[in-house]
Structure formats: C-alpha cells, structure tokens
Length: 186
Ligand SMILES: *[C@@H]1O[C@H](CO)[C@@H](O)[C@H](O)[C@H]1NC(C)=O
Ligand SMILES: *[C@@H]1O[C@H](CO)[C@@H](O)[C@H](O)[C@H]1NC(C)=O
Ligand SMILES: *[C@@H]1O[C@H](CO)[C@@H](O)[C@H](O)[C@H]1NC(C)=O
Ligand SMILES: *[C@@H]1O[C@H](CO)[C@@H](O)[C@H](O)[C@H]1NC(C)=O
Image (tube, rainbow, N blue to C red; front, top):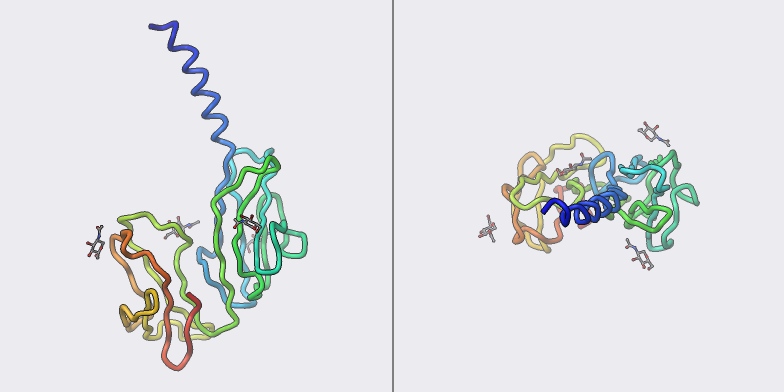
C-alpha cells in the first residue's frame, strides 16, 4: 500500500502549490460606497509576491486599466486613491503577471449627501450584517429608512440596521434615505 500512495501524494503537493498562487483584494475603509473626495486604499493580499500582482479596474470609461496608469498611486501590490470621484465607480480586482485574478470588489462613489455603508461583499450565510446610512456632514446617526429592491423594509432611529443570520432571501439591492438630506446609491 505504501508504494502506490506515493505518486498520489506528489500530485496532491503540486496541486497545492498551484493553488497557493492566489490573491485576495481588500479595501480600506471596508465599504463599497464612498463619498467624493474621500480616500481609499486597495490591497492585494497575496501568497506569492513574485507573481507580480497589480490592481486593475473597469469603469464606465476604462477597461482593465492598471493602478498608476491614470488613476491611483501604486506601492507594491497596494494602490491608493487620494481623492475619489464618481468616475472611480467600478469593479476592482488584482491580477498576476500570468493572468490569475482575485475576487472583484464593486465600488460606488457618490457626489450626493448620503451613502449606505455596507461590508464588502460577499457576506457569509448565517452571519449578521450591519448597514449604516451615513451623511457626508455630521451628525451621522440620523434616523434612516432602509429599502430593499425599492420597498421600504425598516426605519431605524439611529441610522443603522442589522440583519441577523443572513440567508439567500436577504439578497437584493439595498439603499437608504435620510429625511431632509437625501438618498444613497443602491
Ligand atoms: C472588465 O471589462 C472587460 C471588457 O469589457 C471584461 O471582459 C471583463 O470581464 C471585465 N472584468 C470584470 C472583473 O468585470
Ligand atoms: C496608502 O494609504 C495608507 C493609509 O492612508 C498609507 O499607510 C500608505 O502608505 C499609502 N500608500 C501609498 C502607496 O500611498
Ligand atoms: C469587511 O467586512 C466583512 C463583513 O463584515 C468582513 O467579513 C471582512 O472580513 C471585512 N474585511 C476586512 C478587511 O476587514
Ligand atoms: C431566511 O430568513 C427569513 C427571515 O428571517 C426567513 O423567513 C426564511 O425562512 C429564511 N430562509 C431560509 C432558506 O432559511
């Protein structure tokens, strides 16, 4: 039995070393909506920095443009945008020299007065998720209405809503509004 198991172990080892060539994109602050003029830092957390991971994005104006080429300031496998603008809204990901890709993160930048601060997706089933409805100018904990797919689901006195034990039925397009201030993007 010892003999035949050896080749299998070798195959498994090479599969493992193959799958370690991965990266995961994180965004700080941890949010998918931002106000114009705010800054954001995007990082490729990689297992193998020699794979040459770079940040790329698709926006309505650009396709697969790399950090540093007209947007962002690059440092190794991180990228900072100092002053966000609505045209920075788009999908961001890390890509290795060989073309391997990370998870993608969708970022929305608004020139409006309200954002819905939600964790960067995806959210694990069964976990709690808190959504914050924030205004650009203080006070930030104003009463807010929360909408899912266009329908009001809850009004919260302090502007944040927690969904307990999220499941598939919670999937949808969320937005919020603050009376007298405005509405967030979805
Ligand atoms: C970026 O845009 C290109 C061209 O439209 C498309 O092929 C690619 O799938 C997009 N990438 C992401 C992550 O959306
Ligand atoms: C990006 O921003 C972070 C936090 O503000 C800072 O620590 C880091 O040095 C910046 N990196 C670059 C490339 O500007
Ligand atoms: C961002 O928030 C999500 C949900 O709360 C969490 O799962 C994830 O670990 C956070 N990411 C970072 C980099 O803090
Ligand atoms: C998901 O959660 C909702 C509300 O808490 C509940 O009514 C529904 O039965 C749950 N669905 C599943 C598939 O667990």
